[in-house]
View 1 (cartoon, rainbow over the protein chains, first blue to last red):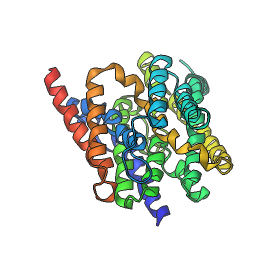
View 2: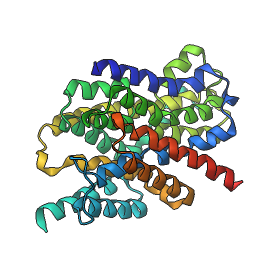
View 3: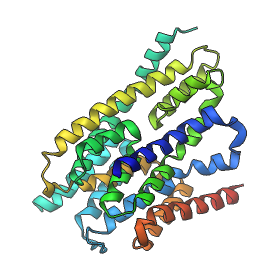
View 4: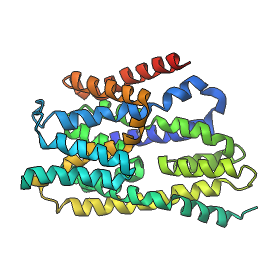
Length: 103
Length: 228
């Protein structure tokens, strides 16, 4: 079942890659749609980020002093200024671990 | 005029700096899949079948959180819809290829490869075998992605659960969007999406993952209209 759904997801993903190159004339996507598509990352990824930080495994909102909030703020600051993906992820993880295990 | 081999090598070199982020991301993707309790073969199979890091993580996270398969598959489609944009931009340079070659080369279109090859294409429009640059960037990313996810799957089975590696998921996505915080319109769209996802978190089948992007894209379209 899961294999089947992964295969469908894979075909769907391949279609998104192939359609504009092999199937349709390139001017089919109007300038307007192209402009909106540029917002896809900003419109999708916060829906993963916010719940993963603010809602815990039991589906309850966390407290403001939760280590995940601290970790996320550090990651955002480091990411914003360093423009470095690894530094962003690891600064967040390390500050999260620091609060949990040390302080 | 550069030879096919030169173009291919140039693609490999151009995409090389991205390995610094692609490899850790792949390792995290593999490790998290195992951490969330999925069959290692399945976690790896996704790297060949889907070959799209962000969507792979989201898919696994949604399923492990009790989302319906339909929602998980649809959200993969939504996340990867950005490739339509890449395809539309690249098609200008790939027009002359045969249909079969277009089908094959499409599989290798990913974010970083698109970014580098598009940059190169713009500067070298007159080259004859431009697509070899795209094969160079995409092929390099493909090989690294495969090796990285396998390493992650192996490493992931050793990582103790107390470390809370799941927290790497939101951090990874923060790393993807953080540079867009420089643009006010993107900040608004992100906040709309994030707040909607919290409001609709209890919607059936984890459909918040689809509802909030739809609301956010709607707001994005409105903002575009206002900008004019």
